Image (cartoon, rainbow, N blue to C red):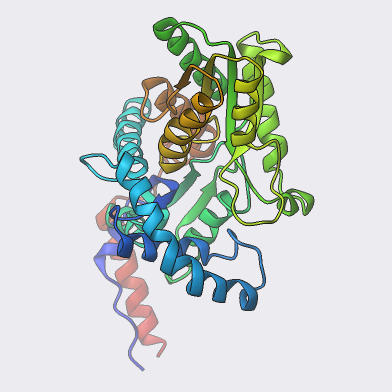
Length: 367
């Protein structure tokens, strides 16, 4: 029996440490075919829709995938950027700036790759990109401040499924959430202050988080509680009274109850209550996307004015702002600790290769 050849590559590997930034994903283009591919992958994930497959998949493929893309194509088209999908564009900018920041922080090049759980750039391509740079240790950072099984856990599933294809799997560390991280709350509160300084202060601050079905929370998902804590800490940082802000949930889908209060209903109620200038932010989104730029900044703005409001001002997500990148780099420090410190090795590269060659000879001799 012939033994496998031991290549120089494995023994010359430096075992680098890298970071994998992850977000949900986007269609490749604001077109029906691209949106159909994306929806099939996204809504076909059992982490996202927790209905029995025999019940859900016929609904998905017979009703949603064929018909929903037509409406969504217009929505995506209204916010599409010259460089592509806003979520992907902002995420790529975050990746580039985080890579530069980590290089400054650690005095060496730290590979940083971007992956979307659904769509492109894919998890497969991102893991391959890190591998090609000699990365053997990966910190996975889902860009979701609040943990949910439908988002953060779906990222983990995708990464674990990809790395388990390999005989030599990389070491993995994960960031679960950062909803109450002091530097995250500071970055959010400072973004509000910058908005107020530039535009004046509104009559009310609405914090809109993406919604999840109520039964997710009932079954143990911490998302709702973490959103409430983010909102409370942000209100405290801004010194807001209880009647000066609201915490709501958007993007509900289907007929089942989702966590409440709902953003659209609250926007209409605030307008009816006499609020004329409404400031709105989405503290659960690390990068602007369809849900913030179209659903909130366009759809809810129109609804607010239609019900008596006058000025609806959307406060952008943190995106690639320097304070956001500083926060991410600082938060990663705990996960990177030890991995980026110099690890003494016995012997130089040639010595280790010679030892490997001797082991290969002994292996063959034993056969």
